[in-house]
Length: 150
Figure 1 (cartoon, rainbow, N blue to C red):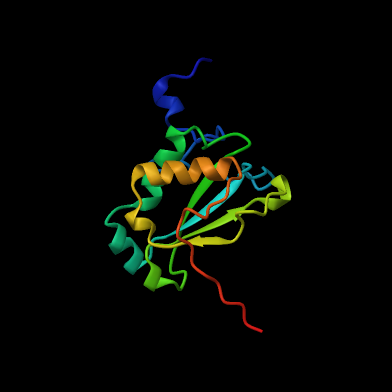
Figure 2: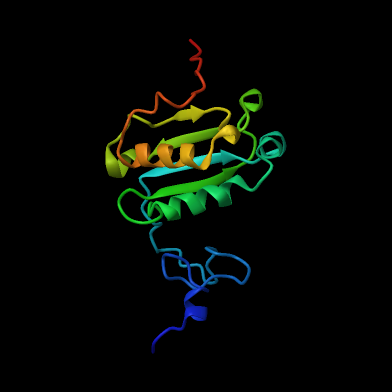
């Protein structure tokens, strides 16, 4: 049976039927189904202070940019996840970048925290996402220095 555009719209990119009002939440839980591969996982702080600084639903905006760059699927997939307070309010809005080192072996950009991302333009985000997909250095982006306790 051929699916119509309206029935296709009710499925996520993994092909699962989704709950009405959602774009990815599957109706039926399949506990043994593996999660979809991602190369990079980005946590976007959307707690009170950071979300207020961004003045928009940043995760949705970033997911659209990722789709525009065709990085929402495939071996270089970038996954955007919302996160509540990451404890770095003075650097709002922050993003934490984690590479899937188990699958990719890439550690260059793993565990990086970017600050003041609410000031990024769409072009800045495109540059960031393309750099991540190509394992390029992120030194052009303002990072939060981490203190290691000894």
